Length: 200
Ligand SMILES: C[S@@+](CC[C@H](N)C(=O)[O-])C[C@H]1O[C@@H](n2cnc3c(N)ncnc32)[C@H](O)[C@@H]1O
Image (cartoon, rainbow, N blue to C red; front, side, top):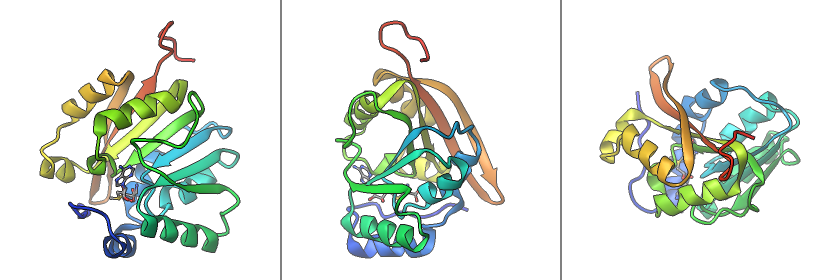
């Protein structure tokens, strides 16, 4: 089972439709359950949609700084509303912004999340360079997409991996995650120190 997504510009209508149908889709949580969390880390969720991943992460990463970046005003409003309702506004900072220009300083983020959003970016290569810029050396990117959406966009995992590597992000693993009938591909990439190539 795959969730459908709008192919053109995101609008107030598509944001509400997505939130109603897929805001709590398993892919918002599956990649978070597949990795370890240290607790004290800064996590940026790019294209955070309704903010569901960050609200789930608030439990897995109870002392982390959690930031959501979202360019669609209607989606950002939904994320803020749902986060308020969950009593998590003091834990989750939701900001307007896009992957092409991430509102975060250089070397400031431990983990970037990009769940079901990569295929929507206007400029993928610039966005990946932005991710490398904001990650600390040793920081990681968790990028996930459903296989059918990759097919629909004529994109392969190999193509994504090669773009990551061109942007200075080194692929650590690519794995398929399953939750009942929902499947997603998770790529984990690290930003290594540009001089020493060390992890931290
Ligand atoms: C299919 S939704 C996924 C939302 C959320 N990550 C999830 O897993 O439910 C795609 C999201 O990407 C956002 N988006 C579109 N263009 C973007 C860009 N250039 N940078 C960051 N996010 C973008 C959309 O506004 C939308 O919220």
